[in-house]
Length: 84
Image 1 (tube, rainbow, N blue to C red):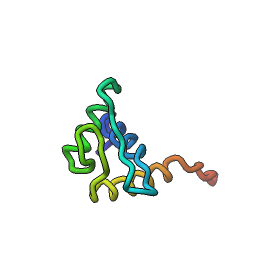
Image 2 (image 1 turned 45 degrees about the vertical axis):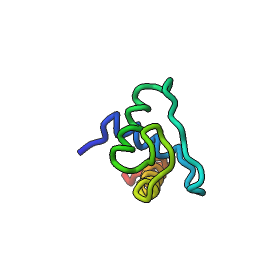
Image 3 (image 1 turned 120 degrees about the vertical axis):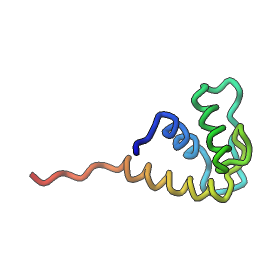
């Protein structure tokens, strides 16, 4: 299994949510890139956001955001020096 370009768009969109408060949602406007609109619809279809154009994270979305943040942190961390 690998990340598809669509999955990466979904992960990036999830990371746009503010994890410090559930009172802030996002709005994906109709003039956004098609890939972002499709990612938002996919998150809605999976039950991770409350509206097809964003809205608020659902309980499952909050959990998905936590996982996405952890993964982003691991992948964006400086690579340790390899023994050689």
